[in-house]
Amino acid sequence: VSTAVEAPLEQPSITFQDVGGMDAIKEEIRLKIVHPLAHPEIYQAYGQRIGGGVLMYGPPGCGKTYLARATAGEIKARFLSIGINDVLDMWLGSSEKNLHELFEQARRSKPCVLFFDEVDALAAKRTDMRYSSGRQIVNQFLAELDGVESPNDGILILAATNAPWHLDSAFRRPGRFDRIMFVPPPDRHARTHILRILCRHKPIEDIDYDYLSKKTVNFSGADLKAVVDLAIDRKLQLAIKQGIPKPLTTRDFLAAVELIHPSVTEW
Ligand code: ATP
Image 1 (tube, rainbow, N blue to C red):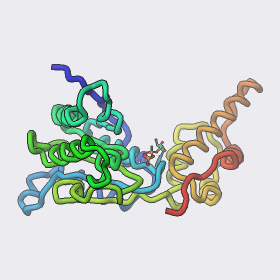
Image 2 (image 1 turned 60 degrees about the vertical axis):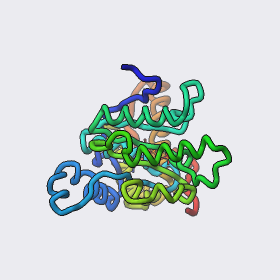
Image 3 (image 1 turned 90 degrees about the horizontal axis):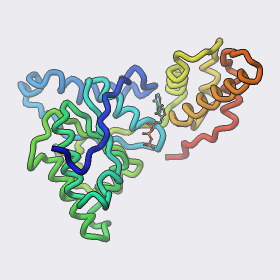
Image 4 (image 1 turned 30 degrees about the vertical axis):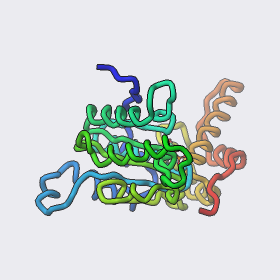
C-alpha cells in the first residue's frame, strides 16, 4: 500500500571511520546504541532498557547529520531523514497523520535510523506554540516516541537541534530523548582528522595537515569541506587552462582558507 508521505530511504555507506574527531561521542554511541542493538539479550539480562532516542545538540555544520548517517552505516541500518517540511506539508493531509506515516515507514524498514533534523521546530514547548495544531503535533510526536500505536523496536530515533532549550521538557522523559549528546565544533586535533578524511583519494602532495588545522580555528566540519571543495575546484580550473592536472599542495588549501569564512562563533 503506498502512503501519501514517503521520505527517501538511504542505505548509508559511511561509517564512524569517515567521521573526523568526535572520539568521545562515537564511543558513547557505540556503548548506548551499537552494542545494545547487536546484543539485546545481554542488555536485557542485566535489566538494561534498550531503545529510546538520542538528542544531539551543537552549533550548525559540525556534523550532527553526518554522524547520524554514519551511525546508520555503522549498524547497517537504513536511514530516514526527516525535516520539518516533510511533516508540515500542507498539501499532504494533516501533519499528525504525516508524522505517524513517517514513523510507520521507519517501522516497516527496520533496522532503521529515523533522524529528525532541527527537531525543535516540531517539538517546541507546547506553551510557546501559538496554534493548537502545533500542540497536536507535539502530542502526536510524544505518542509515536512512546510507541503507543505500534512498537518502535528495531528503530533508532536520533534528533538534532541547535537550540535544545526550545524543546518541550516532556521529550526528555525516559524512553523518549533521554540521552543528550553535545556535538562540539572540531578542535585542532579533530580538524586535522577531518581534513585527512576529506582529502582521502584526492590527488595531493605532502600536505601539512597540522599547519592547516592551526590556520582553521573556528572552522566547522562543513567549513572544512567547503575549503577542500574550493581548493579542488580552483586546481581543476587551472588544470583545464594549462592542460595538465597537478596534485594539490598545502598552498592550494591555504589559499582556499583565506576565502572561506569560519562559521563557529562563541557557543
Ligand atoms: P546542521 O547542524 O546545520 O544540521 P550538521 O552539524 O548536521 O549541520 P553536517 O551537515 O553533518 O553538519 O556537515 C556538513 C558536511 O561537512 C558533511 O556532509 C561532511 O562532509 C562534512 N563534515 C562535517 N563534520 C564532519 C566530520 N566530523 N568528519 C568528516 N566530515 C565532516
